[in-house]
Image (cartoon, rainbow over all chains, first blue to last red; front, side, top):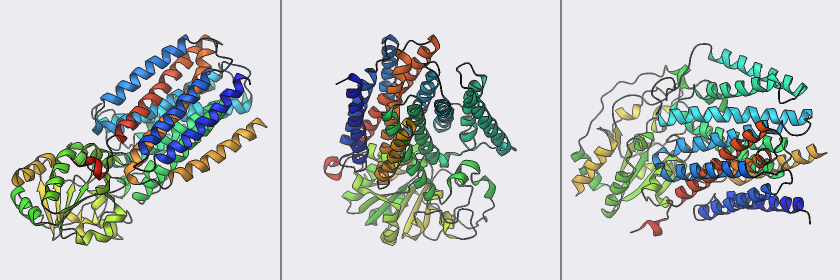
Length: 457
Length: 96
């Protein structure tokens, strides 16, 4: 048996392990083994990749592997759980960048035909967009680069669409020119590379914080598609199989996120809510409540539901929330955590934070599950969520009309923990705050909840 | 013929991906995403070719960069997914 045959058989084994791994990642009980299985598949594929005949020198490979492994291991261990969205964004970016370089490096090998040139261009194009797009997403999520030039909110300027369309046209033109006469010295190659990097920046800059779950899962999909294109460029089966699995998975998640906001992907990517801010203003009196009064109501409640949003992550309140949940349970109340699909900054963000605080996943309920029985909830505690509980989404004349929400306004009592009366990302006023059964608990979420816990103690 | 064959694989894998992912509970969206992201580091297997073939100096440099980035993606992606999943506990395990 030749080495090449063994390598190809190993690729098949690796693909099977990836498939089973992904399958098992879909169930809470088997998820961890699934991830281990997929890692085993990766190990087999990588070792098989090393046996290729054309590899004659291993020094640079070893250098790259050691550097990458040290950095990856450190990053994954040291990062705080609240910084998970930006970490995932960075890993996405590095995958895309790697595919870009793989595609580019292919040009220096044997003769390049038009089809190979086309796949190389695709790898560079998608890899480049993933690279800078992820960096911008990281900057927005971590808010570490200050307000300028990478604002965490949506950044739009007049003529943006025209500029983007021109960039896209220039991109298509450069790609065609390169494919006609493919060579590693072609200037069109550098044009494609540069344009891809700029496009990545331009594509993510206008997207605001609340739309980040869509962007992150889309970039995840791109990094898979880039690997897939690189696979075509070097004629490698496993890159194509694994890349397209990831690409498909990313697209599905993106779609779930878009549905949860009742918006199309195009709408999220190109317009934002900015265009439709003229929702009617609501007037009325809000009813603030003190920590002490909140305690009396909670003490008597038999069914309590927490509804977390990005504010819980920002205030790092997940541990005190769980503590309060335990106290309420000990007090005889039924406790659940209702999680909207787009709460937070990445798909499943709230689930990860609550898992970190040791909340058992049986207590985490999805929107479809809680809404039919929300009327039996004595107290719904909204922590740093706004748009996902905005009842105006049920009214036809609202810009948010049609977005599925958690109907907390139908619970017997609603506590809203909030810093101020500012409207949510969508810029639409929230009639929930003026509701008959709503009580506002102003202040930092962590401090407010600690205060209530203190009352119980 | 090679192209047709590879495209065949591509199309089947995409359908398989859709089937595999479409029924995942929201609780697992983040681990699923970062686990899938780790798989996209498979481009490492291709990066070896560029880094180790000694065809041109630039190709070696590009390849080494590709190997580094892809390894970050693979190692970081799997470890961070495992760290997240280790926190997901059912009621029996979490009870103190």
